[in-house]
Image (cartoon, rainbow, N blue to C red; front, side, top):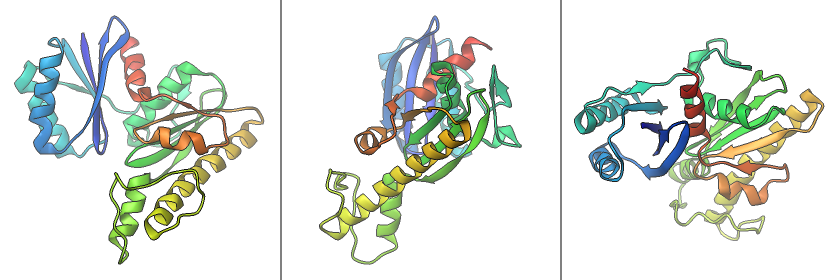
Length: 249
């Protein structure tokens, strides 16, 4: 059994990989001082893994702390994945492939496995990333913008009189906000929605055919009811991409 860790900017997601199948998935918001508790939880819930594989966009110091916890709990040295130049028919659109975020790359690997159609891969977390893949598997590039809470919180921190928390942000159906806080929340939601909608139109125009849109990330479900473009939500897209890479390596 292998333990797969997807370490984002604010959450760590995990799954076990057993004979090619993902099992025992979970997620936890993290701070560096909480890593011992997170790994204690994993050790208590899972059998000892034969290997730990990590896809991380966290800072090097955070990765060092994770590596220390893995050594302490299981006496293993983890394998860190990075973005590649290509994987099967999927080609990386960055001139320097390793500089593409590994989470974005793995999400595209999984997306290409799920569909051969031109595809928009959208991750909605601390940041929002939008990546476009054409019908022959060429990554056309992407967009990066602040996530819903990060964008709202940035405005609140740099503007007098606005107080927001993740719990109080309201994304209900009404278009216009009736107070400053809801105006900020709805404004950020519309900004992200419009970026996705515009990207979908651009990809469809370039490929001159119907496209697919796959959404992942902790806040992805917030967007789905508001999008006019046809989308599906897959919370484990990065972990599925990891499993796909490991199956062929």
